[in-house]
Amino acid sequence: MSALLPAIEIETTPSPTWSVIWMHGLGADGSDFVPVVPELGLAYAPGVRFVFPNAPAIPVTCNGGYVMPAWYDIQSLDDARRHADEAGIRVSRDAIRALIARENQRGVPSHRVVLAGFSQGGAVAYTTALTHPEALGGIIALSTYIPAPAMLAAEFSEANRATPIFAGHGTEDDVVAVQLGLLARDTVEKLGCKVEWHTYRMSHSVCLEEIKAIGAWLNARFAAAGKS
Image (cartoon, rainbow, N blue to C red; front, side, top):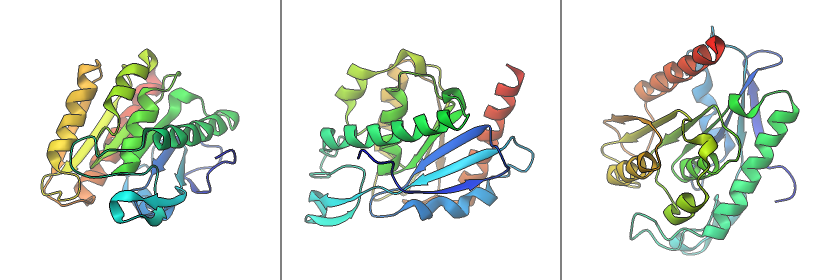
């Protein structure tokens, strides 16, 4: 992954001062969360560049080796760790770090870059953000889990201990059980981070109530940064 990941980009105003890099779930693509942007209620927020990267297509073991867009291979789904391929997680982390670096080059400092992700994309968001050497602007972790707890603990970055985290999960999720989301929350909190935890009566998806809550959370981040 020496080249930057292909991505869809949406800018709410010219010359944005914030960036949100949003990773899709297993088998989806960057277009998956594009419709969310106008529903976030950011009309009075500073300019934001949304970056929706596409994961590469790779064989996924737990799906019979079928080739699909994925951030890393998953060998099986029989425990909280989901037997995720740690080497693949590192490759994706490096790819997202390259996108962060490009935002820096385009004038958006790391502390104004938010990493967001759904399901497997959320796992990459958690791991990348909490091991990133520079403080980021926030983490949005949706219907997700921690794929490599030992790696996260060993490489945890003090720079992101205070990074705000929004975590949302469906109580009726039959793909990533809410218990896995709670375990992720507890794991991150044991590292000293604070998590704003939300649950919604839904399956493995997002709902309008959650989207509105994410928008309010982002607006609060923007306002807090404006006062600092």
